[in-house]
Length: 348
Image 1 (cartoon, rainbow, N blue to C red):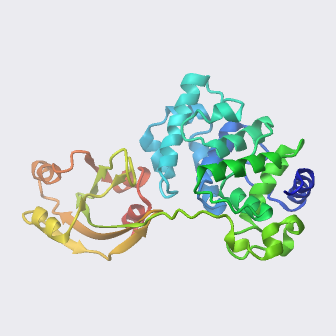
Image 2: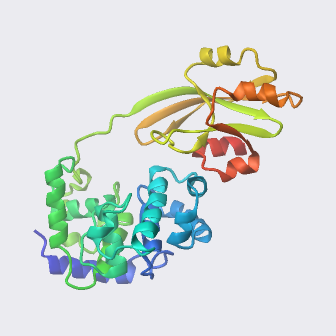
């Protein structure tokens, strides 16, 4: 196994000289800001997160402001960032911190893990950066770095192998300098030790990296369980009346849970049968496939414009099939929590 002192010392020195130092959530020990960045950065690139992070802090400068918000407000600001369960957990976590912890985040990784949406690695990052706790992180980037350096070929789809890697990550921790060490692991995984075409010649620990020595970088990390992708197809009804659009709130579970979206029909026949007696006209728009983590969703948007002279009773009867919906102006819709493809559609 790689000697812990040598590995950590090299990584800390590299981070201090060549790592990232200008990110807005760095150089702070405010657990709210660090926690927010860690949640946003899960499965999302830094370049994407930067704009969302600034907007979020402008609207919710502290955990109390976030806790006091409605879920719609939170989802509205999160809209387009994806993986919306993160936003719902973020909101619930803020409410728990305020209601049960007096607005103060717990100071240990163990207690942080008891909060909604905070897993072991996120808890460790907050505890290390904000409270100096000597604890290991193991997010996706760090798993890639450590499995390559150590030549760890255990299948991380197995809980026992995941625990074994956690143990080795803990053994590598330095006695001092946990913050630059933790940041160094993150930086190395995000920059040089990429999934494809890693820049091994620039890596500070290449001489002690098993994968680099054996040219087996592509083998790591090992995870055999593959996510089975599904397929889905719907007609998407973009119903407009008097410069408003009808949106329905999706269920609390499933894809786009809690977001506002368009009514769906399983088939074109179902759509035509349902709308046959409606006044107005339909425009069939270009179909597209929205790619989610586990699902390819083909959507066929149809824009239906009800005539302005349709009265409220008639319009109400048309939308009665969707009791969780309501009419939105364009500005109201764009301020709500919308799936990214719907936001793009409304702006087209």
